[in-house]
Amino acid sequence: MSRRWFPAAVFLTGIVLTLLAAHYAARSIQLRAHAQFERSVVRAHASIDARFDVYEALLHGAAGFIAVENEITRDRFRTYIKRLRILESYPGVQGIGFAPRVAAPDKERLATSMIEQGDQHFRIWPETNRADFYPVIYVEPEIPRNLARVGYDMFSDPVRREAMERARDTGDTAASGKVSLTDEQQPSTHGGFLIYCPVYEGGTVPETIEERRAKLEGFAFGVFRADDLFTSLFGGGALGMRLEIFDGTNTDSGDLLFSSGKVIASSLPFRGHLEEVSHLDVSGRTWTARFFAQPEMEGTWAALLLLCSGLLLSFAMFYLTRAESHALRAAEQAAAQLQVSELALREGEERLRRYATELEHRVAERTANLAQTIQSLEGVLYHVAHDLRAPLRGMASFTGILLEEYGPRLDDRGRDYAERISNSARRMDRLVQDLLAYGRLTHTAVPLSNISLEAQVKAAVNRFSEEIETRDATVEICSALPPVRANEAVLDQVLSNLLSNALKFVRPETPPHLRILAEETTFRMENPAPKSDPATDTSLYRRNGKFVRLWIEDNGIGIPPEYHERIFRMFERLHGVGEYAGTGIGLAIVRKGVERMGGRVGLKSKLGTGSRFWIELPATA
Image 1 (cartoon, rainbow, N blue to C red):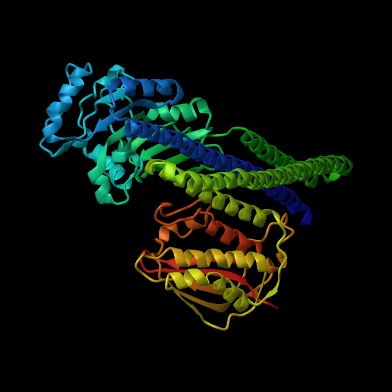
Image 2 (cartoon, rainbow, N blue to C red):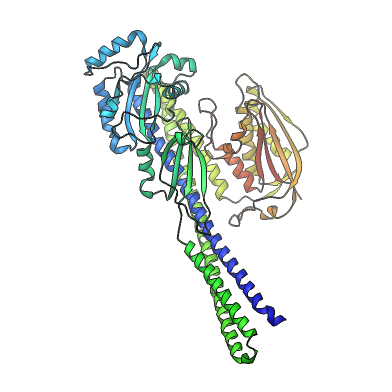
């Protein structure tokens, strides 16, 4: 009976080994494709953000030129824009223009001025009855598709008007929704969009919305052809995958701004379909980006060949063993064939083991190279930030001397400029200090010891005593706070950032009120510490242990739930620098510090109801 079932057992064993090998190969292909896809998505986001930073700077420059000119004319505007070399240096920009704010009684005077400047057929269109108009009077370069829009009152279009009102009220650039550039010689299938930059009287942005609306002089604007813009970034297959960009948060075909091509369908096995949808913030307007992985044939045929070879080998083994069971009279010949077959199987298994070992070695080598690259980049960031402080201190010192010794000789504008330089230098120095602090957390060892959490909290609160007294704030510490295992310097830095934020982000008329308490909890860490980080006590991650959760509650402005994770990233800010000072790195330092000590950080908050930040650290044994 054993000889009867032996061929079937050999066949099933071969099938199982073949499927395992094919699964391992397919998994390796899938991981490599997914990693490559994620890198491409990150590069695409970075390219788009960098390109729009350039375009916003371009519009800010045009708005600044218009604001400082006593009397802007077509020739001066043309000369300024011509030096920018729009078509050659800024792909996707159809034109840069200016639309002034024109009161209804001043329409005829504007038409007369434009005729004197050479535009004999100037008129404001379409005809509407409003108190103010925003006609296009200058647009460069002067090509037919741009000149066709001269005199057009952009405020008459609801899509453009929404962006103009947002730019006017925020004092910053604002992108419009999707518009159809129907006046082009070669119309774009997916249309385009505009970005507006407001121009105010005096050249500075007023502090309140009412003042911004009253002092608005007009808009510097840019017209963008979506296909040309994104083709210059991702044309020629440079992205390595398909990209679709939609205006807004929907992915309807009517909102499509750009598509890099069609998805190539594939029915081959061992290949998963990769897709990712993310959002982009373009001058205050949300776009939706959808990425698709292009089919990759490399590696797929190897997996198919491995599967087919394994199946053929399994059938061969089945045939040989079955023939041996029916050839009792030819025992010697059957035994020889069995030895040959067994030798072939061992050789196949040996080749498979060598392939698996080589593949594991390659994965380990690439992982090590990636870790080394990340460490090198963090080191470069640390040294660059450190070297920036010397010129910043020089700027702040010399600006202070300038204001102290030569202040009476300067007019109001000169003093204002000097104070802006000094404030900017100090803010940049704070930003560099935060970068250095973040770099130190990344590079230096963080030894842990038993620390009195209550003493550490009270010491941190005492450092803010002057600010607490000045702002009529109250701080309630609910004893007792259990001891924890932590690094004293890092914990002090974490507490200082959390207390500073709790005192800062409150409404101006509300005295800050802080409440600090702790509780003990037990959990298992889900993400083990990296083996490459020798400074972290990895034993904390291997056991179910007791932890202490410290709460810092405030009565501040609160944080919407959708931003709870985002605020812990580098340079993330929910408010402007003029509204609440800061660098946007403090909470990133808090997360990095707590994680280096083997803990976690989080918060509970809603807009307008205050915030409850918490950090969780290992309790003492």
